[in-house]
Length: 144
Image (cartoon, rainbow, N blue to C red; front, side):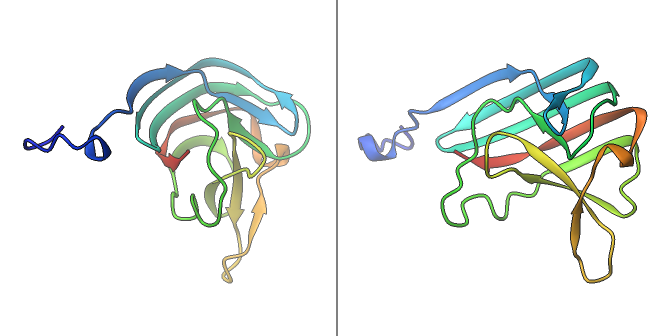
């Protein structure tokens, strides 16, 4: 309770901190990662997270994505429309701005590249990755 307010509706009764293991994918192929760590804090229906994936070894074909988030994002209306995470990376050539967006089918980020002046996005695929690459920081928040 806060400031003497004991109303149940105003109680902070859903707080959690923890770790998770992020995973990298190209299409449906799980990629080898030499170091992957993640932390999160869940307050009510909002999850704040940060993760790192070192030395991702490329294999397979398809879209590049990161999974293993601690909770599945909510996809009702525009619930996660404005929750743009930030990302730092190496040995990924998006040909423009690298944009991680939630997959509406599960707890993954699919990476897109903004390569035109119109702002059109196209998926980052195995052809945009070096043999090894890293996500030095992926952080943000989302609604569950």
